[in-house]
Image (spheres, rainbow, N blue to C red):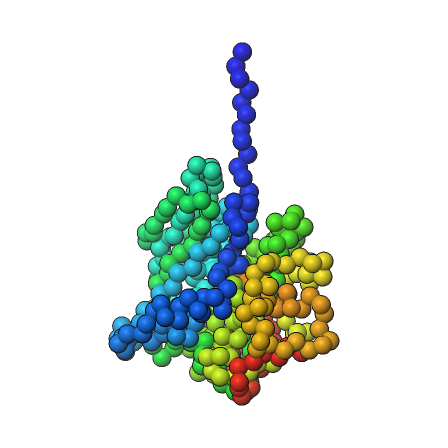
Length: 353
């Protein structure tokens, strides 16, 4: 008599990792301490953007017409569908080039997988998801590196190009600038709900649609002189990345809570106590420079500190350019792009009203 054919089901990707997406990032205050003396500055006059301003990517001037943008980003699964995981990770990695105002030209895959735990077709689907996004961006995955890892890890190293005069740093905002956010917030909340089987199909579709939308408008925004600063909102949450912009330019920010765009179920889930551990970490790192008005709901702190994976662009522009920036974003499919606040003379601080 033949033995029964028993097939062990593939494990959930999110069950194999201790964190997911950009929520895996080292806390910003810890990272700052680690890097304080680790990367001494050198005599590199062509290095236009390095580590000093906590910007999205490194930028190196090649000549008067070209600057090279280099970045890397990788993380553990935020979703269980392997193809979606690959797509999200690739979109997130490409975002840093767009956030500098550049255009990606090629990528290298960074792959760490538990080879004896995950079926090989699952790993192949992750790689295919990343390749599909790069094809959409019009660039090749030209190589990479892989290791056998305890937890599944995927991402890209990305190279891009821009005109040196069109690089948009995160520390060049000006007093009086308007703050515009291109994507809705709440990715971390939704990913936490997914792990707890609390996210419905509509919420999942909303999360995937947002996290796989390429931040391509960054390239065109960089051509506008009235756009002064640009970054993307990822693992440090809205407060963390806005505060980086404030610190770099020695400005304060006022953010209107009522004007913030949210992924559909995020507010209800947060009211039910769903949030990530990373949101508390993010709050701890920035709370000394943040004031929340007393009329805000109890869940506001977790929502404002919620780590975003493949989040939107945060734009600081002159007030007269706000309508043009919003029109550009919405014409490219960023339907929830919104004006969320403004920047004022320093010191670095955020008030949420």
